[in-house]
Image (cartoon, rainbow, N blue to C red; front, side):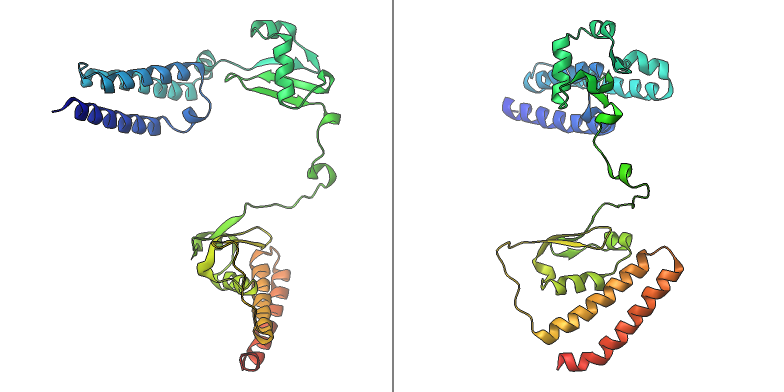
Length: 286
């Protein structure tokens, strides 16, 4: 077998193996590496690179070494989940730099942080005055966490209003011209409601690249052709579509309202609108 083919087979096999090992380790190892995980990552990468390029090395021995180095962090993480003392030993604890508005100089020296480095971390978080800080810590992974004093914190909606509405994440209901039924069901909506929204905006389903609906029932649409213009609609068709949109809106309100009294109101209005639409339909279509 030519040497380049052997190297290619080795490299592809090792890449696939490392991919499976990474999936086994989970997403945590892909976000923030601990000191131990950082060392393991460098070592495994070095072993994999050497093993793929050096045909004189026995691949069985290299794979055994990679498995040991890769699975050891998995074993460590499983033990750390069960025992806090072991977790503190391996991952370490957060170090408090500021407490009750006072800088703890001994902790800065313990982590070999100079005052210049401390101020640099503050500036990265748009904090330029030490008096603004209530609490600050250096996390085990090296991140810097800061809590501002109450009077220096930005105002939030909850500070102004005690009864804040629950806002759900927008749902993608159309993707690549296809309607997604599961997100519509989560919102308590139907395909008929969505099609009425598209007709109101004079948009064809197959021309929609992506469409989302928020918790308030507002539809955001992005078309494949951003330069396209919807055709003009006749006045009678527009009136009919407006009626259909009203029926769909009241169906949505009925589905999303929590009290039975309000549900009955929306249901009755929707029924009356359906009767009006049924009566006017022959005239508007003619």
